Image (cartoon, rainbow, N blue to C red; front, side, top):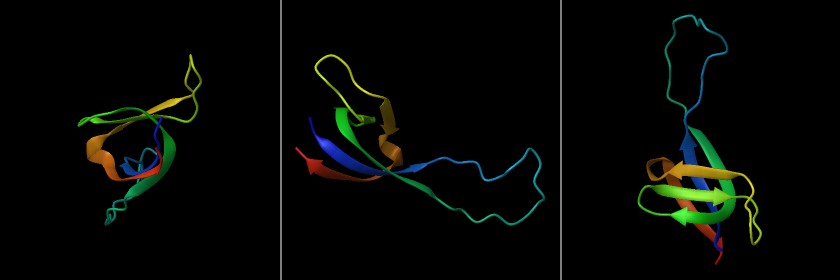
Length: 76
């Protein structure tokens, strides 16, 4: 199974409460670096797991292709 590092941009909350004083907002990307084994990859996105054995996988993350900035293959 292929091991990769994916850099992707996530959505994120910018306020600490339900009401925020009006202000000028600059766009700040929330960049994530995630390492995992590729369970599935196609034009829609990539599905990773952090661990696996013959019958099960660890937690699974699905990343839409449009959120991916870069994929680096660490091991084939």
